[in-house]
Amino acid sequence: MRICTELRAIFICCLLAGSRICTAAQPVDASNAVTLAQKQITAYLEKLADLHCTETVTQEKLSDNGHVMASSSDKFDYLIMMSGDADDFQLNESRVDEPGERHKLISTPMLVTNGVATLLLVFHPYYRAGFNFETLPEEIVDGRPAIPIRFTHIPGGRTPAALALRGREYPLDLQGTAWLDKASQTVVKIEASLERDMSDVGLRSLSIHVEYKPETLPGQPALMNLPTVAVVDVATPRQRWRNTHTFGNYRAFSAEIEQDPNVKVHQDKPAQDSDPKTDTGTQGASKVP
Image (cartoon, rainbow, N blue to C red; front, top):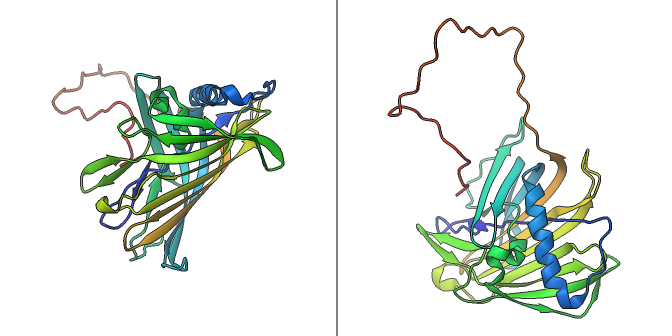
């Protein structure tokens, strides 16, 4: 989870995760809600690489009283790929400008938040041992019964969030609550904040609010509970920012290669091996800073 702001660069990466809705799900028992949440996130990761969406990011610089001093809005085509288990985890993401999108240049330093899928990774086997969990009494969320799960980071344990500042990374101790729908076994809302003030490294406060809604995808028989809005609020000892991410137009990702009928491929010359010293080919996607 990363953010870039003044200090000439506070990064926190706000990564949001969705979860799958099972059409024949069994009601959630509060005693094993954490285990169910882990299973949902693990299953979701298997499908996440097949999706991309339109992401709109609104960046706002705020005054001490919350007044908007400057703002900017941009639209992207977003794709995220994750894989891993309890022993290894990898995340690659791609954010590309929407066709015809022109970014407005502003002189005010703004917060930059990247990512779509890691806050719920507190339940993933790779991170779960780094958090304490507590199941709270049932609540009603959007008119439906939900089970709140409180999570608190264990100092020194793994966390899906970090602060990158002046070439160094500082793991973030997060605390928060995820609300698990009692019937569908999916997370419908999650909120998180810092366990402690980090003003000594330039971060006074961080709050994240994410909401998930069922989405119908073309060619998919079941609904998927996917992020629809995420709000990230960050304050340093002297400045404050708020970014609002909205997600929509989810669709399955597919790659198609078509041969232009006007282009002829000549095979009258044998192919030559690339020179290993000058070959610029690369494998894999680079991580977004």
